[in-house]
Image (tube, rainbow, N blue to C red; front, side, top):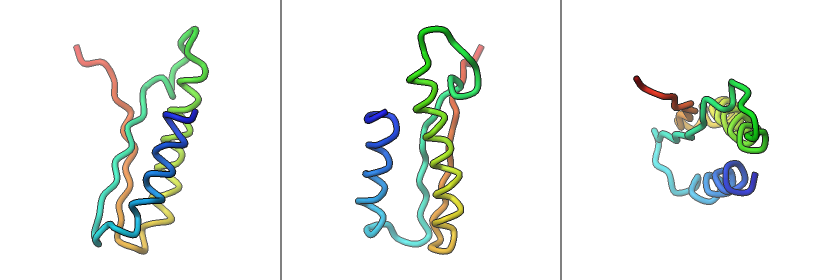
Length: 77
């Protein structure tokens, strides 16, 4: 949780005053947030919360001209 959720949150909080308008923030999630994989619960939970953070920040920062996107990467055949 510290690496996958808290660190991005506090990093965004620290650099937000330095961002120009318009700005863009991209948070990388994982498909683990959407599917259940054995032995992966903490990782999946942290990535799900990261994508939720992206949705919330997107709404909160829209008035500043800052776009926030959450990506959930997947396998490519």
